[in-house]
Amino acid sequence: MDELIKKVSERTGLGEDKAKAAVDTVVGFLKEKLPAPIAGQIDNALNKGGGMIADKADDIIGGIGGMFGK
Image (cartoon, rainbow, N blue to C red; front, top):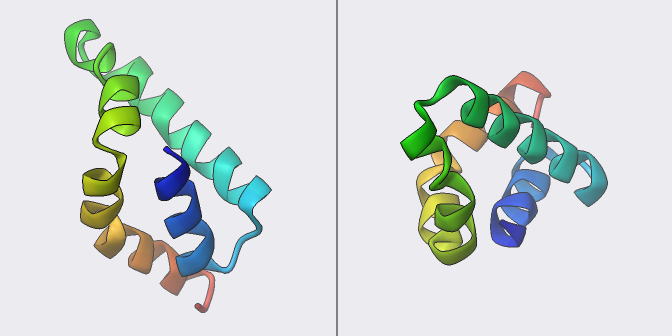
């Protein structure tokens, strides 16, 4: 998850504390909305597959950065 937070921070220009809050908010939202079996795997995917997830999220983060003029 640290790699994802770093990527969000770099791409949006947010400080790491704000990037962490953003990632935590999105992860919490996903856990609430997804079916329990899938939601239960989110932390595992972020911790073990964080690099892959960070790479895949790059396009999405770029769009978010665009909203902040970055």
